[in-house]
Length: 420
Image (cartoon, rainbow, N blue to C red; front, side, top):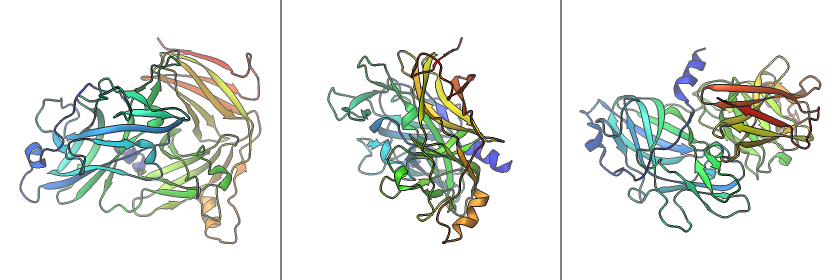
């Protein structure tokens, strides 16, 4: 239970609309903003950015012009007590343009550090640049697969910044490191097929690292056939992804970092394959957790896929597909973008029976170099059922489906979710 509370306090997912135009003075000296006290009462705060895997894009660019923190999560823009972090040189005045898709497999982009009064900080603002001009490169943009660079509209994200609730204790004389996970896949909303482009609906989470932490990392390898850029690996807690990535297309290696200390389900999904789940995967602060090895890779049986789709109202809702294994757990198998104009969504779900293993059974296999592969076993027999979940604010609606039973009209099973 303690690990669960640690997770709750360190990793808070937010789906936010931005807040409006213009950047702040992020290059100001730390002492002029934070009221840094005498020696011994200050600590150092570092901030970095990372990303979960994106879907359907070759690039997702954002330009950061400022990062601010405050000890009160209720503080407003004009309140005293804000501390501004200077961006790393040479981006202190021009802003730092980042392709979020470069920040997978544990890669971090530093956003700066500052000496500030020791204590607990609960609010962070990530300030983005505007999109001046009518030609690429844009400050904030997306490049669809096979497409051209298109503006990513941030109508109000620049003025006061994207608000992130954090729980960052900065100890006196030590370094606290906050890693912001900017989920590119879930943060980009397509505005239909009208050519009107894309909106930013930021989905952010924050994880705290202390200077003496050497773990909070899960590493592994998938089979060469799964090293194709489409496989996704995630760590989930109670069916909610905490960290996700795409294996390296050359080596098949994946890294999930940073991950709050606790115990998770590892979920591997890939088009044309059944889902694989490894339960009871531990994450500790002092060592990495290996779930497979170069000679003992994770693999899944092939499977036909089934298209499932429909509409949701309002179009700002979130859609995902869940699957409950025999005896548990329940895991998220897929997430679908929602068309910002029509509310349309679509999934492609495997009809094959999922396979599972326990980390406790995997550990002795990894210790034996003679073991040629890891063993995942089928989870029961058909029917293969999914729960399609729609979430709008705090309201949730679900519908259970059997992907082996066709519902007209094909190829989509027409589902409809309407929230008051």
